[in-house]
Amino acid sequence: MKLHHVGIVVKEIARSGQDYARLVGSIADSAVFLDPIQKVRVQFWRDTQGTLIELIEPASEDSPVWREAQKGGGLNHLCYETPDIEKDLEVALERGAMIARPMAQAVAFGGRRIVFLYFLELGLIEFVETPQ
Image (cartoon, rainbow, N blue to C red; front, side, top):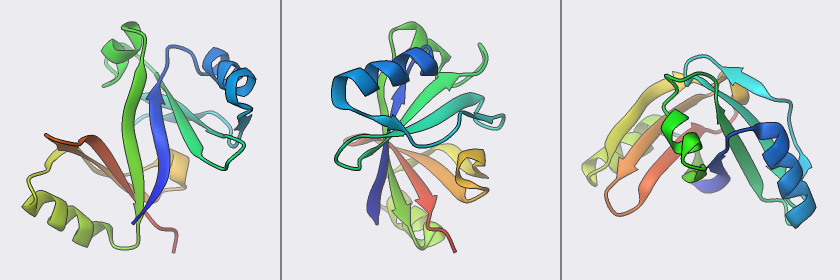
């Protein structure tokens, strides 16, 4: 597996994206996507070193990140890309992870599957399958 992106919850993507641009020289790497399954809007930004940052804005008050955004947002998760999402999910569960959001196709990744796991000592981790 390799680090794919860092997910950060924000109140408003447009404002936060510009803040990252001014602060660290990030540039927009994608359009804003509405993900009705996750109930969020997301946009990817890339910094000058190539690190991908996912800005996550709640799409509605029943979004899983609504409360976090209302508190000011911040680091939400690390995402790792995996060529075998089923195998890595199984290993993670054996090591004590809990499924936080079940496996689903992600709009932002062209339908590739993602799964969110919660580890007591690591926090929220997302797996995204490698493109075929």
